[in-house]
Image 1 (cartoon, rainbow, N blue to C red):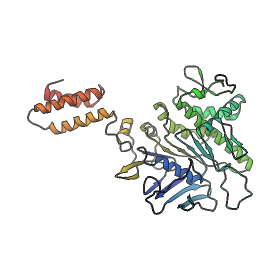
Image 2: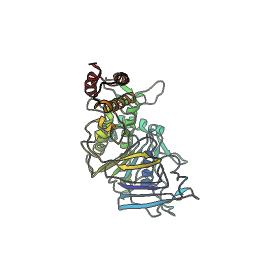
Image 3: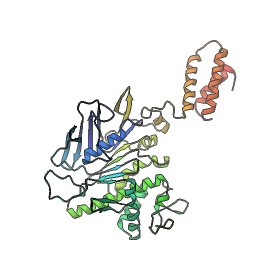
Amino acid sequence: MLKNLTFEGVGPAHTLALDFKPRLNFLTGDNGLGKSFVLDIAWWSLTRTWHRDGIATPRQDASRSSIAYCYEGSTGDFAYKSDFDHEAQQWSVKQSRPAIPGVVIYAGVDGSFSVWDPARNHWREQGETAAPARPRSFDFSPDEVWNGLHFGDVKIQLCNGLISDWVLWQEGGKPAFDDLVKVLDALSPSGVEKMQPGEPMRVGDSVRDIPSLRMPYGQDVPLTQASAGMRRIAALAYLLVWTWREHQLACKRYRIQPAREIIFLIDEIECHLHPQWQRRIVPALLDVMNALTGSRDVPVQLLAATHSPLVLASVEPQFDNERDCIWDFDLVGTEVQASLYPYSRKGDVNAWLSSEVFNLKEPSSVAAEEALLRAREFLRDVSLQKTPLTAEQKGTLLEIDSALRGSLSDVDSFWIRWSHFREQKVGIA
């Protein structure tokens, strides 16, 4: 499990230090403040590979740049401070073999995935020429998730891809298909709208069989034509099943013990998902390994960037300050700062929206927020006034009233206070 990251001279801030909890770790804050960057560095720290093209670039205003990290591995804690070598244009790595962090999965917001499997990927030691050639990690573009992944100049088939494997597993009655059905069920948006496989079908003139989903209205729809949210969940379900299945097969082949933990890194976990799904996705992910293994013996650590109050509200019944945390990223002046959010149950999604996590003054439209701000300021200025309103003040009141009527719901609680005040001052009920 990843314990901490510390940056100096790299990323959105001159210095940044983050301590992680063993289960749920949410990264919140406005766009462009470094949440995805933290996930990229977490992936590199755990796997020694980069999720995207290129590597983390030092700040131009920094005299030195370093990344320090610590994670709990198979043989204890592994800590290292990496310095950037400007001449070699790369980050230093500890030459001794690091501890195994477990299986690491990174789901990108663009539909890409990266998987690091200690049984199938390899940290080659310097001068270790006898070790078999293995990919440093499995890095899937969105297309490769669906159509397969190859390795090396000879194009070794690493993964058949979702379309081929799904149909192969389903038509062959493979145990992997049973696992896929279980994971899809665990990740479904509700007890009514279950994600269930339909029969494979062909699309157009192509002879290729395509997986399908059975819709709540009884029709089978080709997965390639399903909604963006369904495709994202289907891809996640497939990669989880494929990763765990291939990990178990590799462990048997190489006669090693299976991983004892899984680390999920997910960028914008709510991407493309309906609110029904947003408030279920995190609890569902915690249950996925139970669906795959039939036990809860494989602990899961989640690092997820999110902009969704529904995601945070969804974990309130399970949130444990000893195992879970929220890191809130803010721009203070010209400097990005990350601070642990003092968690408390809000009980309401609107309360999350107006909390310091999302910084909305009102959980409403911009027009309603501006109207409410003017109304509250006006109430504060004239509520203790003993004399009748001036003509100018009456005009301002009617202007604010019009703005409120054009932006607030008819049942908004603010109407109780405002209507009473308006009736007192200008006689309009």
